[in-house]
Image (cartoon, rainbow, N blue to C red; front, side, top):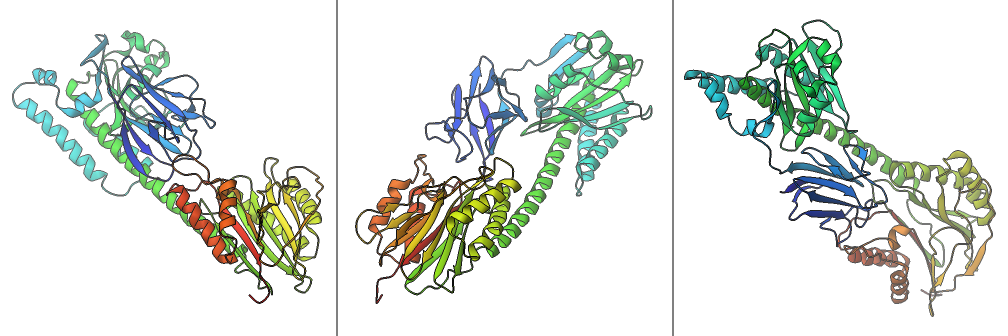
Length: 552
């Protein structure tokens, strides 16, 4: 018994995985059977396992949860083809769940369920017994003719609503039902009637039962119901039976990736019963429809993705314009800064501001909570709030107090920022600073161990009011200050090992004599070599200030 999964990874890559045993553990750890480079999933996030003739999925106590068809997994969930399992930012679709299926299932003489895949694979030999001579060929020609007609009709660009109406057109033309409906399964796992038609006017009736939805959509069965009133599976569908519906045929909207929904045709009591060949024909129509529905959705998703990419490109262009175009030129110093986003736009930013007629250089490196577009919007707000107090000559402690109160008032309570705010006196090398919950910058001396400028205040915007006090150090000739965000120290390699502060300290000891620009480039290169091609989970931002020796 095998399980085949189609995987859409968080970076957009698509591939398949077939379970080789009785269980598959999914996670970002190398110990998992199926390892995904997705920072939003746990090391061992979820497990697919076989129990008897069925495959199940369960959550392994992950931080962000496991979801099937939009619903959170609490207890082990039995999988059927087409089920969509979301772990973090990655999606795993059950393409096939192999298990023995009976050739023919009867709940009574009035209801027949057949596996739709069997009907698609080959004509039913029992059907050929019911017809004789050339009638068999006529039936196959009719089936082929319908499929060719539908393919031609669906060749043009079409919306999903137009597609569903066209499918109903063909169903009424070939099967002549009194009513028809198409149900689609939504991302939340609910089955919604997406299109319906009736020759009896616009009245609304259910035209389904939970039992029928379960058999057709969950199990992938094609159904032929001779008399719904005589079968116990429809005992709970009183409104359906009371409406006069007796004869039904239903087929899953089935393509190689799974079941998208179902199409059901109905006729009242006294109408002709649908024949086995009608069921075959409807299964074929439903299969073509499913492939077209999925294609229409993929086109819509691609267009939406393209639109979002364009918006991200525009957002990044605007964000880059807010960052310093170049570092200020200060006699006796080299200054360099940079920002590399992990998701198109960044939740980090840096800033320089020359003031007091060039005698002071104010600098900021900040990292707001969260990632992506929301974080980028918050960085723009924070940059605007910082500009005036920095340029007006306020010291770092006063800047942080004012900006923290304003940010708290203007943003949701869970939003805040860590920041390193400093003012450098260019003549003396005195650096007054506030580390507001930020990663400790490195003051790399020409000799001895680097000094960590540790946090001495709360993150900005975390509380309505906050007091800050300045720390102070002197940059001597030859000293280098490296301010950075956690995207550098928390970068991970394939073994889920972080680059880390100890590695950065050792690197700074060996490269303390480099220029500001060369030091920044060497750090980037060292981190890239460490991660071995693994995607960065967070933005990387830095500022380097190097005080030059006299005569250099």
